[in-house]
Length: 170
View 1 (cartoon, rainbow, N blue to C red):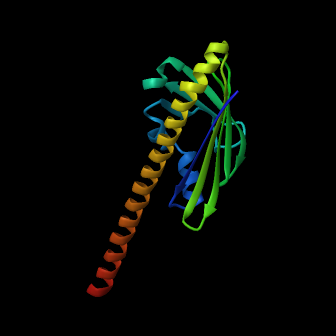
View 2 (view 1 turned 180 degrees about the vertical axis):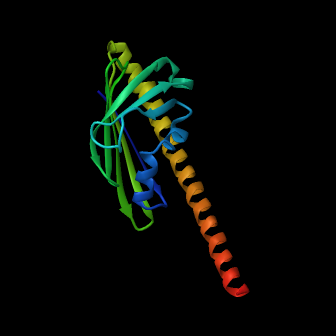
View 3 (view 1 turned 45 degrees about the horizontal axis):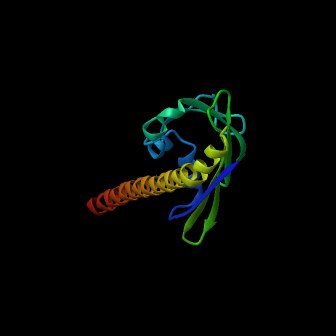
């Protein structure tokens, strides 16, 4: 079984990071590798299912579903592949508040039916590629959150200027 763990610091509160991570906006983070959408009804939680369609370097993965197996709001979400997936995987995102925002630990445990040679290739190439992709995915998340927070701050500043202007006019 392979394991890839990636850690990143994001200057945003864990509540904002988590809300973004379980929203449809997360598709913008993954778009280089997959098209993703929640296919179960209701709020995201244990038992929720997300559908993935591989694209780009992951197009050979086809389509697969993942089910949420662990969910602690603003702290952790774990998902595992279900059904006819080419890879048997469990992905986990753990959020820890820090003085500068949020530390994210993204872990991916996977099992692929490989021969001995395939397992060697996995160690030399596949796991390195997954680590690179996960790092880029978390960097994408960081950029999108930063942009999203700046837009909201800018809107808040415009609103406060508007109200200050209104008060000064009256």
